[in-house]
Image (cartoon, rainbow, N blue to C red; front, side, top):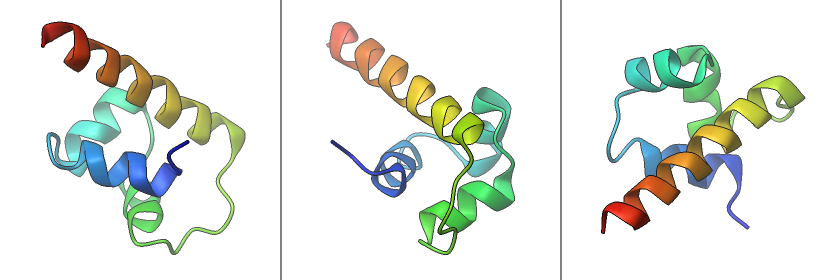
Length: 65
């Protein structure tokens, strides 16, 4: 299972932090801290938003082929 940091890093290959903030509802500061492994404790709401968007995005990428 990917960590939140791995998910963020993978999504940043396709999206900007600004895009991710808009799409996931997670502020850029938190995204940056997760990306740089500086945020040790992520709230459930943010973690769920990141995971939900990530898995939906991966599913769409896979089915688009």
